[in-house]
Length: 116
Length: 116
Image (tube, rainbow over all chains, first blue to last red):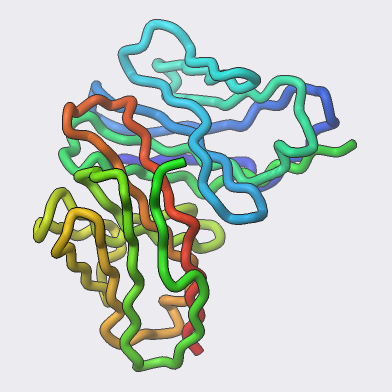
């Protein structure tokens, strides 16, 4: 069964430093996609970055990058130069390529607090 | 921003009463989803729709029903609300017609439901 694990319930980072949020996944489907979403205190879900299982390079979007290690089944989110506005919940999610519903399986999330 | 609205945004109800939550989109996306968010669980899929009158169950569908009579509207009904259904409910949409795995899900603002 598909599963997403985020082992860090909460993390602190100093402003302007980089931080890595961990995500491991489990699936038997060779085709899948991995997503990261941000949920600030206001509650909305904001899409950050996507990585496909067949993508040759790690995905990057501005200050966000995804450290994709396929053999280890990990898809860690790296935020560079943290800002106060990065304080939020972060969710890792997966979609199996063979699932016609295109549904997402979410991890339990990591709460990030950026210190000034 | 994707055009997704949810109504009501907040609701307090009593155990045993029926409740209907509405999700409305202006994007003409085929797929629509209802998730619930609870502490420690991330988001879990309740039901989803892959077209008008086409729906299917998700991971936590017991006690919920859905209907989709128009492309733009997806209704979630709690036939007889229980305290365990106190949660934040998110609607999401996806345009996965091509099967492109990069199509992320866009989320509505959420509905906070409290069942007393």
